[in-house]
Amino acid sequence: MKIEAHLDGPLFQNAVQTLEEAAKIINCDPNVLERLKRPRRCVTVSVPVRMDDYSVKVFTGYRVQYNATLGPFKGGIRFHQNVDLPEVVGLAALMTFKNSVLGLPLGGAKGGVCVEPGKLSRTEKQNLTRRYTSELSHFIGPTKDIPAPDVGTDPQIMAWMMDTYSQEQGGYSQPGVVTGKPIEIGGSLGRNHATGLGVVYVAEQAFEKKGLPMKGSRIVIQGFGNVGSFAALFAFERGAKIVAVSDVSGAIFNGDGLNIPELIEFVKANKTIKGFPKTVSLTNEELLELDCEALFPCALENQIDTHNADRIKAKIIVEGANGPITNAATKLLSARGVFIVPDVIANGGGVIVSYFEWVQDIMSFFWNEDEVNGRLKTIITKAFDLSFKFHQEKKIDMRNAAMACAIQRLEKAMLLRGLYPR
Ligand code: NAD
Image 1 (cartoon, rainbow, N blue to C red):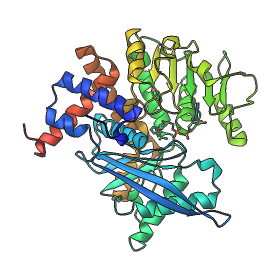
Image 2 (image 1 turned 30 degrees about the vertical axis):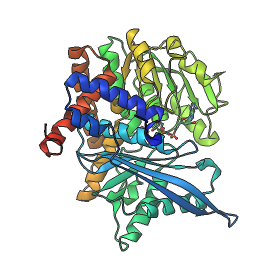
Image 3 (image 1 turned 90 degrees about the vertical axis):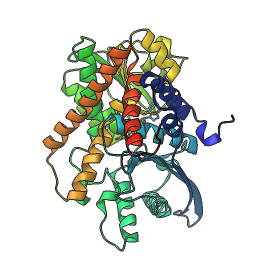
Image 4 (image 1 turned 45 degrees about the horizontal axis):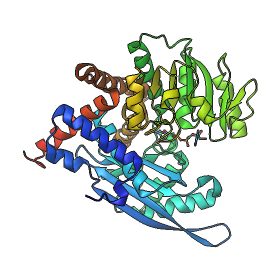
């Protein structure tokens, strides 16, 4: 059967392959499996934007609502020049399985606009965000679908989305429509660093399972944005040696370990890691292949595939980014004994604290940062333990184990709701 173009992206095909493998392991109902292989709804919108020179540019935006069996749709919004429908479908599927394995009462979705955000002025970015939100206003809402930040979007963009949606609801403030907002308008303490902290919580588990100490270990991090920089900071605070990091400009290396708090200040001032003192420059390709105990890919998808998998020397890989390792590469690495914590668990910290933010907004009752961090640790550790048990019992890699846990929960819910009787 011919695969429709929007279902033919590499990220989505990877997810479907993992889904099929995991379905066999848990003997998943074939009707449930068939449903889980398709998104519920794909929305494509044209987004006309008044530019600073008074011309109008029309961008293309998407929102894919993949599955809502467990609760309202939830997933980030990406502003990036490579955004297209197949990529958004793949990311929305990942959100569905992530929210399920994490035990959250949420479905999965993802959105994005094909745009290079660095080329827009602040006004243009605001115009784009507001029009994109208006175009989607019938599809999103605190009980329907709750967007959040992803690559190229931030708390300011969430604030504009929340404001636009609230204006369209008669001007009543609707903080629960998006998460990742600034604290002043209903954001949660701990949200900004949540994904990076979650990466380090599960990395601690992985080090323990491998019988390695995190303190003094060499860690390499690809990407130094929200996820990568906070993961670096929390690992640094635990005594790990962050020997190399990278961003879109390339990589920097120091065998004695980088001073991460100083590097964060440097990046705030210079907008790049390039030129940080006492470092050697490397390419992103070289960074991935460095000798180290752990590698955290925290940039974009498909960074490790069959071309470079053989050259990866890390013993542990924690997927801070979504889909950084292809399935074929996962199999090669796992066969060599590399322990991979898959994205659906590893970067779950963001959506877990987004869930907390949504709960706090609905209750209008806010928690302190220790409560947020503590609850985050409980949820992400539970998901790790559940998948690790499956990984050991069934002798499968952690990616398949996490997926098996995810679809087991979805299957139970679908059957209980009577959607797909045997
Ligand atoms: P970000 O935009 O803040 O940072 C991305 C970083 O990657 C930047 O340092 C950028 O320079 C770098 N980068 C871009 N292209 C690169 C390349 N080709 N090689 C090396 N580095 C490159 O984005 P983020 O929020 O940190 O997200 C990173 C990844 O984590 C994405 O896959 C995203 O979907 C995933 N993620 C993010 C969150 C979150 O809460 N922010 C939650 C879950 C998953």
